[in-house]
Length: 190
Image (cartoon, rainbow, N blue to C red; front, side, top):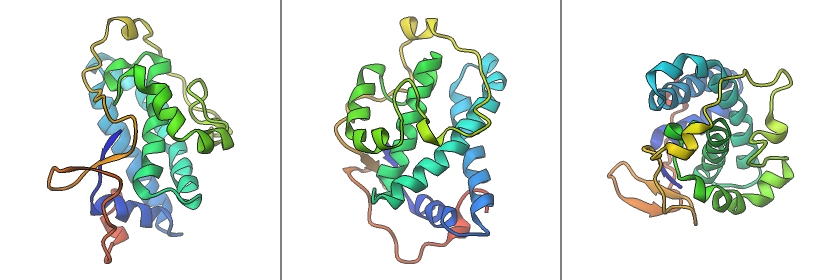
């Protein structure tokens, strides 16, 4: 999968790891992801998906931190959250929100199989043990979209590894080097 990576991503990581800043950063990151992905949805469907996306992305923050604690790089940890979001989008038939084509679902799953299996995550259960106790808000599915979609926001061909698009627009395999002077205040919401 291809992700962007810049100082803001490293700032967000630091902010999520800091008590006292964590909750503000988490809210900012959830809001940012809801905004980004709901804009990809058909305008008539955005509002009905927002509560689901808020709950879902909030849960993925725990997944991100767990992946970091287990030794995954920043880009890999973040990629796990994007992969499971795409599992969820697929399960709901939200084709226009998918970041990679559905024929790459199993490839992305296999790359993180040991992490996903350890935490009960699967295509059918994208949050596994990270599912909130109160669950995730329901949202209407559009399964018919999977058959007729052109997956306009999906970018294939990056299923074998994590790829990072740098601030210069270059695409490389793996993380960029973390800057020495990362300021957690550069994270969204802080």
